[in-house]
Amino acid sequence: MKKTLLLSTLILSAVFILAGCAKTPVIPPNNNTNDQLIGGQKDEHDCLTAAGYSWCPSQQKCMRMWEEYCPDYADQYRGDNKATRNTTNLGGFCGRSTKVECQTDADCKVGGCSGQICHGKSESITSTCEWKDCYDETKYNLSCGCVTGVCQWYK
Image 1 (cartoon, rainbow, N blue to C red):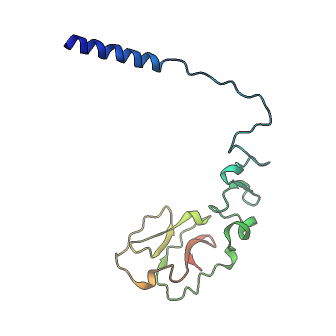
Image 2 (image 1 turned 90 degrees about the vertical axis):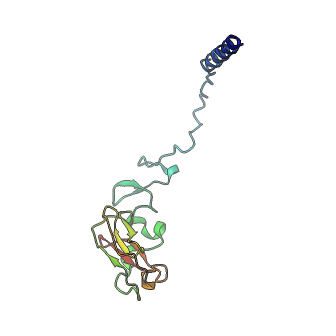
Image 3 (image 1 turned 90 degrees about the horizontal axis):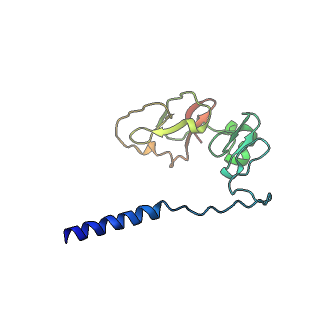
């Protein structure tokens, strides 16, 4: 009985191994030159447009305009103009900014135990874990971003 079970197991294993080694049929490519790979479209600057990249002339590189700041298209892509960001009159907001150097909004992030600190992505921030209503950036309609080259809260 044990020999029969062992022999059956070996035969079944061999069948599965050989079936897995069988050649997968290769479908020859269509030589129609009008066909393009989906998602492979690039513009004249070699930016992968299907992935959301566009050329930023002032930065001389391909960018996703919603991720990085391109002054050439600020109003079109970001819905704001960095020149009009208000960093002085923040209502009663009592959070703070580290004002570390930055190039784009992506270089800045919200941190601190209560989300009250606007700081650089590479900074390690610790704060006391207390909540004050004046820490609520949504209540004051604030964002954390790169303004005049430093990470800070703005309206």
